[in-house]
Structures are given as structure tokens and as C-alpha cells.
Image (cartoon, rainbow, N blue to C red; front, top):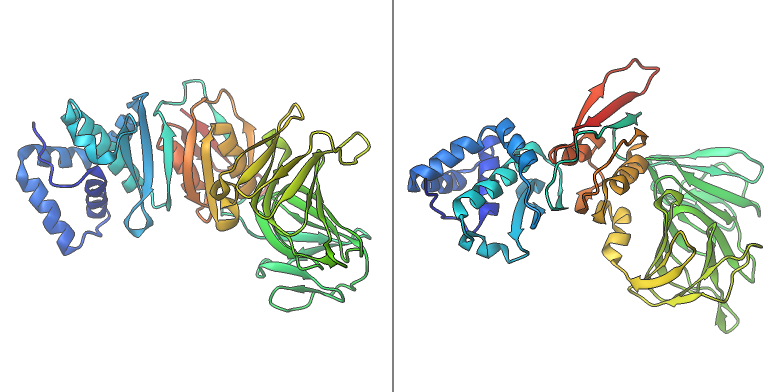
Amino acid sequence: MKHTGMFEHEFDMAILFSAHVKGELDAQGQKQLNAWLNASQGNRELFDSLMHREELKKKLISFNEGNSEIIWGKTLQGLVTLNIQEDHRDHRNIFTAKNQTVKLWKRISIAVSIIIALSVGGYFFINGLNYFGSDQQIVLTINDNAPGRNKATLTLANGKAIALSDTKTGLVVGLTDLTYNDGSYIDVKQENQLLTASTPRGGTYQITLSDGTRVWLNANSKLIFPSKFSTSQRKVQLIGEAYFEVAKVMIKDSRMPFVVVTDQQEISVLGTHFNLNSYKDEGVVKTTLLEGSVKVSLLSSSGKAREIGSVILRPGQEAVLNKNSELKITAADVEQATAWKNGLFYFKDADLKTILRTFSRWYDIDIVDTGSLSNQRFSGKLYRNVNAYQALEVLKLLGLEFVLEKKNQQIPQKIIIKP
């Protein structure tokens, strides 16, 4: 049965269909939908078939087209929808392809399936739609499926740990006192000592150092710094990931360097904005420069920076240190590197293990058994303020099933993901 097209592409149709299902279709939308339904019997049959959600999900899982790129895009009311570009051609040309009735069915089926099932802001690219494999099973232990929030601990030199307020957004290290960024005081005697700010999984926090440098700590990260910098150098140590906006400090007629040390490298800057990702389980260390310039050096066995092999970054560049201790400069995707700071997950050609590691840090999820994971690659964005179940629903719609095991209060709940 022939389908008569009245919309520019299936993107518009998916939005109307989903609004119809959710009871949010306004008068103008209903008029547009009715006109399309009355245009042909084929349109009405297609619409009736699309309203069966379970059937849609089955078709989504079984659909496999290796040369297709599926794009999930932001739509009205922040819903998630999807569009397919055949062979990376402009989506406005999709109706000219051969066997257009079948292709239209696939596009609309997947689009409506996802837009109906999700209310998650953002979009996702799936590089080929394949199922995940029959022997795959992932067990996730979840203590709190809510998204991460402002949460950190400040540890003093004497070992005393202070839980920083989760109702505040940042810590300010002053010359005479410690405060939150709203000016309220922290009951700690300020003295020259080494401090450690640490975020747990599911936590993030902003720290303003005594020189005015601002640091945003990502989840499961640690920053070690002096309460007062010396008059000759500024040095901090990072474990995990942080975004730095380094203040410019002058010593006579020259700028005082600001040094960040990880377990493998040293970064020396003057006044700049950069992101440093040094999570050990990622396998690489990435230094992404947004503004100014930085020098990245490998550490010797004695812990000192080596001049041989060091690199100078310019804005828009990224230094990548791999497992073989090779330091290379590449063009940076600044938006991706800093997405976490701006409240987004941003995956780019990432495998499932990478995505689950990221979810693990943000949602405080333990990956108990990853089994045999697919090598399928993903790219895309999701807002970090969605809960774990909404984020995992993205994977579920692609054929990765999960169920919740109910436990008592003493035992954390588990989510089992299986085909």
C-alpha cells in the first residue's frame, strides 16, 4: 500500500505521532495529522501499525542495516526522536531512495518507538544498529539511581574529613578562612596546610583556590592542593578529571606557572582554561586546551618532569598519553571534552564498556559482570540530570534488556542487563 508524504521528513511525523500517544497533540497538530491520515489508506494502515509499541520494539531490535547512521535528535518538549541518513546523505533526500515504502516504515518505526518510550533530553548516534549478542549479560549494582549532584569531602592535613554541603555549589579557599561560594563560613581554622578535595561516584564540586584559580571536579576525582601557594610556584595534584580556569599571577614582570601533576605527567600553565581527564580505568590521559597554552611533560621514575618528549598545546588541541607512554597531539573536540562540566554525557565513537564506565562514575553503579560485550560504537549526547533508569533505557531500546532484582534494605539493588 502506498504511503502519501505530506511532511518534510519522518522527523515531523514522529513528533506528531508521539504527541498523539502522549495526549499532547494541539489543535493544529491534530489537523495536520488528520490530513495525513486521510490522504491515503496506506497512511492510515501505517499509523495503526505504529501505535503498537511492543511490535515497534521488536522491529527495532531486529532491524540491522550496516550502512545506516541513526540519529537521535532533540525535539519538542525535550523529547528524544530519531532520524536516519542513508549513506550519510542529507535527510531531506530520504524519500527518493529505492523501495521507499519499506525504508519509510523502518525510519518511522524506529523514530516513533524511541520518542514514545523516552522523555530524555538529548540525542544519540548509533553507528549501525545491531543486537548485542545472545551470550551477553551485565550485572549492575545500584545504590542510588538518581543522577550525580554537588557532593564532596574536604580532608585536612591532620586527617580530619569534612563533608562539604550538598546545598552549596562550591568551596572558596581564602587567605584567612574557608567559605562556600555564597559567602557562608566553614568552621575550619585556616592555616598553611595541604588539603584534599574529593568527590565520590555520583558527586561533583567546584573549588576556588587561594590564587583565584577555579577548578571543577568531576565524579570520583581528587584534587590535592595547598591552602596557600608559595611565592614561587603553584602546584596541585589531580586524580580523575577536572576542568581548570587558571588565574594569572605575576612575579615581578613574569607570570607564575601553575602546575598540575598526575601519576604519569605534569602540565605547566601560565593562565589558561583546560580540561584534564586522568581516570585510570580509561587507559589514556587527555589534556584538552581551550584557552592560552600549556606544556605537557611525562614524569621520570623520580617524579620529575622530563623535557624530552614534552609537547606544547595551543587552543583547540589535545595531548593524549596512551598506555605505552606515548604522548601525541591531536585536534580536540572541546565540546565533548567539557560536556560533563556543562551537564551532558557526550560520547563519540565510544564502545559499550566506555559508556558503562561513565554511567558507573555518575550514577554510583557497580559493574559486577560485563560478560561478552558488543563492539558496537556509539556517539551522542544525553543530559546528566536524568536518572540511571532513563539513561539505561537508551541501551534497552537497542536490544540490551535489563531487569531489576528487588533486595532488602541491607543489600543494594541490582540491575541485570541481558539480551
